[in-house]
Structure formats: C-alpha cells, structure tokens
Image (cartoon, rainbow, N blue to C red):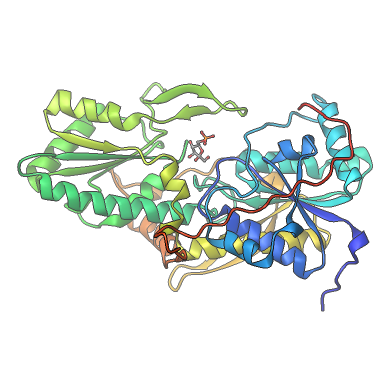
Length: 423
Ligand code: F6P
C-alpha cells in the first residue's frame, strides 16, 4: 500500500512547454488528480519554465474537481506554454539560482515538465540542479508532441489525435475533390506540421489503401523533394484517377537541404518557423501542369482539434501524467514515463520510466521501412504502427450553444514572496 506524504512534505510544480496539443491538458488532469489522491498540493507554472523563473505560479487547488476533470477534453495548454531555452549551468548561473530560490520559497520538491525533446533537455538540466546547488528537487519529463519525434517512446501523446485529424481531413477533402474533378478542381494539397519528421504526413496514409485511393502522394521531410518525379506522379494520377490528393509535410527540403517553405523566423531553440509549402506546390502544379487546385494549411487547427481526438491518445496522455507523479513521489529523478508497445494487434501498451538523457535533444524520424520505395506513400509496416494510434473516439461534451463545453480554469496566482526577476 502507498503511504500518503504529509502536507509539509512539499509541493509539486507542473509546467507545460513547447507547442501544445489536443490532449496535453489530459496529462495535466492526470498529474493533478494523481497528486491530489496522494495528498500532494500542485502548483502550475504560468507559461512553462518562464512562470517558474518569474515566480508566476498558479494554485491548482483553487479549481474544483469538476474543472480539473474537464481538462481531459479541453485542448490548448491550460496554464500557458513557452518556447524558452535554458542555457547550460555554466553559461547562466543566475537563472538556475533563481529557479532554486523560487523552488525553496514555495517548498517545491518535485518538478514535472511536460514537453518535447527541447523540454526534455530543460528537464534534464533541472534534474541535475539538486546536486549542483544543494537543494533536494526531483524532476520528471512528461512526453508530449504532435511531431511524434521523441526518442525511446513508441509514440508521443498528442500525435494520435493529430494523426486522426489528418487522416480524417484527407479522406473528407478527397471526397470533395473527387466530386469536383470533372469540371473544376483536379488537385488538392494538404500541408501538415511535424517539423523534421514525417509522422503526421504519414498518418494521412491511413485515409486509404491501394494505388487509386487518396492520398496519392505524401511528401516526407525524410526524402529530398524531387520536382520532376513529383510532377510526373501528379500528372499520372490525374490522368488515371481523375484527380489527385497530395499531403505535404512542412519540413520538406530540396536536394541542397533547404526547406521549401520557411516563414523567416526562428524560435529560442534556433528552429526555423515552417509553413507555407502548400501554396508553393500548388503554384508549381498550376504552372507546369495547368491543373486547377485547392490547398489547405490547417496549422494550429490540426493540433487543437480535440473534437476529433483519438481515444488511445487521450488515454495515453492521461496515463503519462499519472505515471510522472508516481515516479516523482516514489523518489525517481531525471526520467520520463515512456509508452512501450507490447502488441500491435490487439494493440497493447504500458508505461515505463526511461532516463531523460536518452531522450533530450534527439529526434526520431520515420524509419526507412515505413516509407514506400517510390517515396510517395507509407508501407504496410507503417500502417501497422500508425493504425492503433488513431483508434477510438474521445467525445467532447457539447453545450446548449452547440459548441464544445471546454473549461477555462481560474488560474489563481500564488502570492509572490521574492523580488521580480527578468529571465
Ligand atoms: O513542435 C510542434 C509543432 O507543432 C511543430 O509541428 C511546428 O513546426 C511547431 O510546433 C510550431 O511552433 P510554434 O507554435 O511555436 O510556431
């Protein structure tokens, strides 16, 4: 039986980081409900690690049990997120000293950082703080990213839902273009996120199987873009099927390694902001082949589409939050709960702790064996991997106004005890 620590045993701080997802708040619910059940109070940092540095903390006990439960079906990041890179301990002692000062002032003994590979790096640095600065703090990284590019874990919470949205959108838009193709649109191009990895684009492949089923072309960042082969495939598809659906990953590069579409800005980690590939491809199709086209860039719609979330994904998101609390309170440090697949069919998974050092700053791309030999589609192995992740619906309750009943937390600020600090 588990012993419930007394209240004086400290607080747990939870923060969300990086691009948010349709189910990151389900992880927050897993964290808060589990900590509550174990008698541990939870603060949340407003806007990720920045909230910890600024001593901008939220007292989650001010929100009711029902409000926390409603996080399970509410997209976005309930406490705000950030893209902020902590430098090394040597390069920015002041920030680390400040974190310890804030942790000490509020009796924070456990820190849970919910993010992708960059955030795992931040979590790893903080996990080493205790030793370096003589303060007992346990830090657990909690996985999340629509990009599905975290190492070790079989999949990342957030991905299954964006995958489902992408497969559904590909299927639905293809029914539309098929109807119009005789006298109007011949080519539809959908651009999806995913940064340097083609997982989201690959998920579009679940919309259909077989040479004539959409999507007819998937463009992966793992392959250099070949304009001649692309145009030939579009032309052949339109001539054979009557129309063509293309799904392109935002991270597609040319043979010189340059992104086909960069928005021109970079985030704190030096990542180029991507987006805008679909109109580039559409213009190419029009200019070289003369076909009428439509294109779509769902952008934030894809990672916030909680109404089309995957049940498996929503369950996994909750489970990693719960496991992270258990690991922290049971004394683990510098680990992340990862999803381990134990069987494809029936799909079975479990959660195990893995050292953050194996995950931080690594990127898991699509394996070669998941991309068809012609480079434009997914293989049966990819289908086996992807299919279970979009399975099941996780319905959202709707209000009388016909809109989803999403929750907005009170997010009551904790009284500050320290001098202001500008990160
Ligand atoms: O990392 C998740 C992600 O959604 C990427 O797919 C995308 O390129 C990026 O975030 C966009 O980041 P931001 O919201 O900071 O512009």
